[in-house]
Length: 181
Image (cartoon, rainbow, N blue to C red):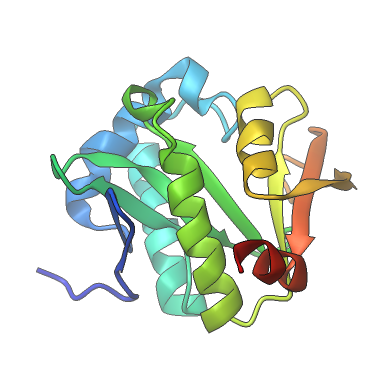
């Protein structure tokens, strides 16, 4: 079994760790669901999803951070992906989230994003965190608001998504720390 290229974080209900081969089934289900994948690049075949997951894992090797896979403590099931993300051309230091539909409505996105925002500020030294949100994605806007983030400005994603409108939500590390204390 390969050694994880990054830390493991824990919350009350979740384990957050770098992506691993056993995550592919859950990840592929997420990316095959038209509603769940609508705001994260659209549906993908399992082979495309593997490449996406490998890119996330590669971010850990190249950047020292990347999105975490979320695993439910009680069941061991893959819940989704959440965490720090900044590929080439990205509009800033993002903490993003995408959860498998069977886990929607449980508060897992806020719980996991809180842990990863703490980690990004404390361990990566990020001074500003953004969330790239499609203007029609009301559930993600609600998560951002629960995290204390606010709409900052319209932004632009790198190719091939550069023509789609994107809202940048976020906050400074100082605002995050003040909210957390």
